[in-house]
Amino acid sequence: MKSFKLIAQYVYYLLIFLVYLSRSVHWGFSHDENQFIAVGQLLAYRGLLPYVDFPYTHMPYGALFYAFTAGISNYDYLAGRILNVVCWLICSLLIVFILRLFWKSGSSFAALIWEFVIVFIFLNHPAMLLITGEALNHSLASVFSLLALLFFIHFMENKYSPLWSAFGCGASISIAAFIRFNYASLVVVLFILFLIYKWVQKPPGFSRTLLSFSAGSLTAALPALSLIIHSPNAFLYGNLVYPRLNTIYYQQLLFKTNMELSTKLSGFLSHILSSPVDFIFYALLILIGLTSFIFYLRKKSIIDLNKLAVASIAFTLFLTAFAPTPTQQQYFFAPLPFLVIILAVVGFEIYQKNKVGFYLSIVVLLFVLNPVFQITNPLSELSYLSDPSQWTPIQVHQFAGEIKQYVPKGRILTLIPMIPFEAGYDSYPFTATGPFSWRTSLLLTSQRRARYGVISPEELTSILDQNPPDGILTGFESPYPGFVRNDSGTLETSFIDYAKTHGYQSVILPATFVFRPITLWVKPP
Image 1 (cartoon, helix red, strand yellow):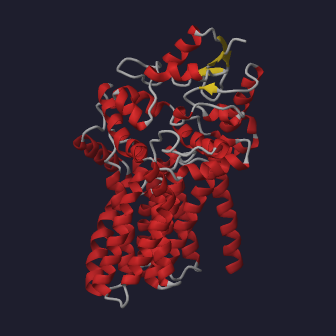
Image 2 (cartoon, one colour):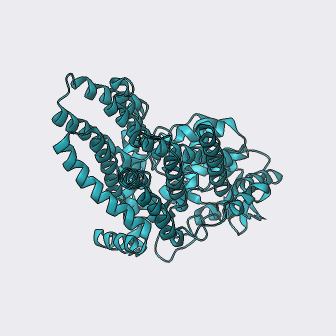
Image 3 (cartoon, rainbow, N blue to C red):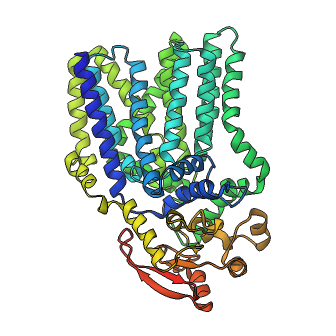
């Protein structure tokens, strides 16, 4: 039985990895990915740091991981996507490891079936399908937040040194917080959970636990804190000023969906009421959150505290999805790994009470979820792996190489600098965030732009005159909104005007990964 289980697990998780990989390589191109890939390239190739050397609209630690992938491969975009594939597999395994801490009889056949079902649900959830193929920072933040939960449970069950577990918990959640800003809320949540443990259990020498947790958080935060201390205005811009500018930007576009709290709530409620899987998840979240807190106060059971930790993390991340304006559907992904764990724990409790009911619940669950997931044959997904020429990152790499026919070397101006970076070109650091900081730049006064290091079309000509580009790429933003309402596709207008004014010659390059041609403007000899 043990050998069969190991073989089944190896085969299953290899298949899961290949499905993640297949989705990643054939996933469509997104300009959202540039702000992560390009920042890593700037760090790897030029040693430039976010905040210090250019404005950045995210927390900084994601740049470290994408700098690593850029440094080990000439296929930067492909390597960045594979990094996410690995992270999603790690997330799946961490969910299973945490489930096994609740399910003590982890060697049973039922445990094997249940972990396969749980990972399958995570793999195919609609929120997962929104982001699973892109090189973003959701996967990285999920890995470290799950690690924080794992360390917390290890501390509570004394599986390893309690102080090192508390340190690991603090370090992991601090790293997650400096990857995605909304995960910073979990530092407070875990600190409160440790205090609840102290209040109920009254363990001796507990002050050392809080010191270990705080030391882990501070140690992991030191690199980010050094950036913040060096460039406080840039940090303020990227994480507080820019989100407000983005709200104003959408308001100017008369973007009426998911802007107010009432519409956000109504939109979410209508979504979960029409989605059986999300209705189950959030119903269980409320149930487990309330009952685990009450039972822990009554029984002082560590299992109930661990369940409370999972529910508290899931609920907090759910609340953070309403903070950005407008709220995008992918923001509701953050609680998903923890909602899956709650479902897994409930399944374990059903198994303890009624084994027949447990297996029946699996059948009913998969039957209910199938219309939502629209499950397809995994072999059809894996077929994409057989033809690398159809992989989106490979097409991007080939496109970047084609530029060399017209511009052998030098500096390329574009709002998607990760593409010329991949071909060995230089670019302008202010474009590292792609269109996002650029499109809101004119909402700042010239004085505030100077304070935050933000470049707008008003400063563009003077910057380019000092260091002219050898080529200019335009056309990536043509389908997207411009600076104001009814201004689609004009974010690159100032680039085109500069090219025409200074005698650049236009060359049309086919770009299959965006399904439209891209214009390369070549500097006159």
